[in-house]
Image (cartoon, rainbow, N blue to C red; front, side):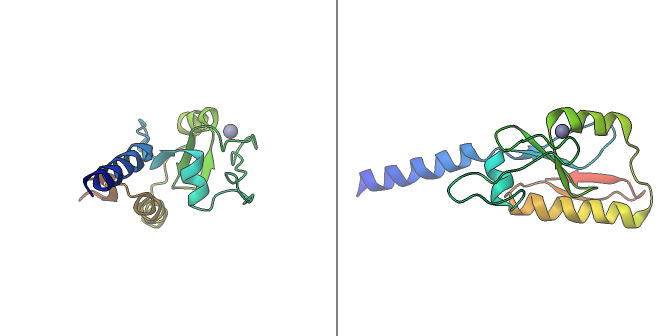
Length: 133
Ligand SMILES: [Zn+2]
């Protein structure tokens, strides 16, 4: 009985360790979540292939990214590769209208919740995006 309990604790601990999704902080305050291919597959990104990770391509450069770090950009509801998220942050301007920011916040919160993350996006009193835990 004790051995079985120990195995269960180890399984839970390992599952927690495999949970890699995190906020990808950036100087323009885009809401971005860095995740694994397994997590992105679990969310339904890409094309399903039985018995494998989904085939996932970067939304900008079309390279295969299911075995790389994947960056979910809430403002465009798209997944990008490492190179393209860096270009995106460098070259794009953040939306300023409330409806677009609501869209970004809502998508971030849906994906973060599905990934079991504690972070939640919201508006600050001066209508800027903030993340709370
Ligand atoms: Zn790319």
